[in-house]
Image 1 (cartoon, rainbow, N blue to C red):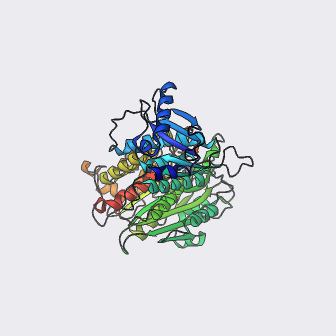
Image 2: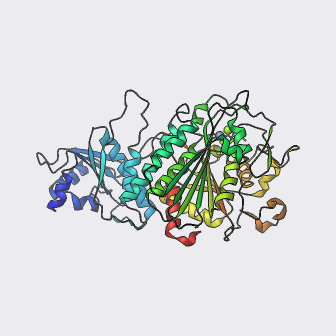
Length: 529
Ligand code: BES
Ligand code: MG
Ligand code: ZN
C-alpha cells in the first residue's frame, strides 16, 4: 500500500470513476488511501449526483498538506451499477473512454501537469479516452485557446502485455494514430498539399521498423498509365504524389492486407465547380488517405505480425485552363476508358488507378479503400456510421466487429452489379463517372470502383456472366486467388459537429481506430483471411 501511495505523489491531478451510487471503481479503490476515498464518496452523495455517464465532480486539496495526495481530483460517473459485467468488452471500453475524456478535459483547464488516470473498466479505453479527449488543433493560432495537454499515466493498471491483447499502451497507440489522422485532415489545404501530406506521413513513420515509404511523382504515374488519376490533378498547380507504404511485419511472401485512401487535398469540384457554402470542408477530402496512413502507423507501432500495404493517390481537384472538362474521356491504368461527365466525381477517378495498381501489384488477401466519396452518403448515414460496400460476408462481419470494439461503427450498404446499369451507357467510352439517373449515388460510386479491382472475380465482365440471382451480394470472394474487397464511404463520418467527451469538433480522423482493430483481429486469428 505504501508503494502505491508513493506513486500517487507523481501526479498533481487524478481522474477517477464512480458507480451510480457514488462508490468509486475497484481500480480506484485499490489505489486511493481509505480516508480520502471515504470523504470523496461522502461528498459525492451530498453533491446531488444523478449517476449519469459523464457527470463530473471536482475535489481540491483533499489530502491537506499530504504531498502524496494530488491536489485536484475529478470524479466522473460511469452511469452504471456495480454489477456491470466488465467482460462486455465494447461497452466497457466505451464507458471508460467517455468518462476518462470528460475528466481529463475538465482538469486540463485547471493547468495540471501530470494526471493519474483510473483505468476503470478497460485500460485500453482509458488511454484512448484521455489521448483523444486531449487532442486540439491550435498550431495555427497565435493565442492558444487551450492549456498545454498534461502528461497522463495509468493508475490501477495490471497488464503490460504484448501478446496482441488490448492494454493501456495499445490504447495510446490507437488514439495517437487517430490524432495523426485528425491533424492531417484538419490542416488547411494551403498547408496540407499533396507534397506536404506525403512528407508529413513519411516523417511520422520514420522511427518505426519494418516500414518502407515511397513517394512517387507524376512521372511515375505517367509511366504506369494512370490516366484517370492524372486527369484529376491537371487543373492544379500543386504536383500530384502517389504515396505507397509497406509494413513488413509478417513473413516474406505472405499476402498483405491493403488499404487505399482517397487523398484529394482540396476538392473544388473542378470545372463542375461546387457551390461556395461548405466548400471549405473539402480540405478534408483526403480524410480517407489520412485514416489509412495513420492506421499503418498504428499497426507498425503495435508490431502486428502481418504484412500491410497502403496506397494513397494525392492531388487537388481544381478548375483551370489545364483542367479536365466535362465530356473528356480518360484512360485508366487497367485500360478501361472513362467519360468524365462530372469533374466533381473525382474521387472514383483517382481511386480507379490506385485500386488497380494495388490489387495487381501487391495481390492482397483483402483490399479496403476509404474515401470521402459521395454527398449521398452524408444524407444516408449522417456522421454516425461509415458505409461499407463489400461482396464478402466474412469481411463485412470482421469490419463490423472491429467497428464495434472501436465504437467507430460501420453500416453495410449494397455492392450490387445492378447499380452498374447507368455507368455503362456512355456512347463514347467504357464507363461514365456518374450515374445518369442521379439516384443511389453512393452505391453507383461503389460499383464503379469495383470495376478496377483486379482479381476480385475472374476479371471478365461480371454483370454479364453473373446475372443469376445467387451471385448477388451474399457471395464470398474468399478462395485463395481472390481478393476480398470493401469500399468504405466516410463522407458523413469525416467531420463532426459534436464536441464532448473524446469527440472533438472538426475532422474526426475516422475510421483509423477501426482499421487498426481490424488488422489486430486478423493478426490474432490468421484463419480470418
Ligand atoms: N468529396 C466529394 C464528396 C463529399 C461531399 C464528401 C460532402 C464529404 C462531404 C466528392 O468528390 C463529390 O464531389 N462527389 C459528388 C459526386 C457527384 C458529382 C456524382 C457528390 O456527391 O455530389
Ligand atoms: Mg468532388
Ligand atoms: Zn471529392
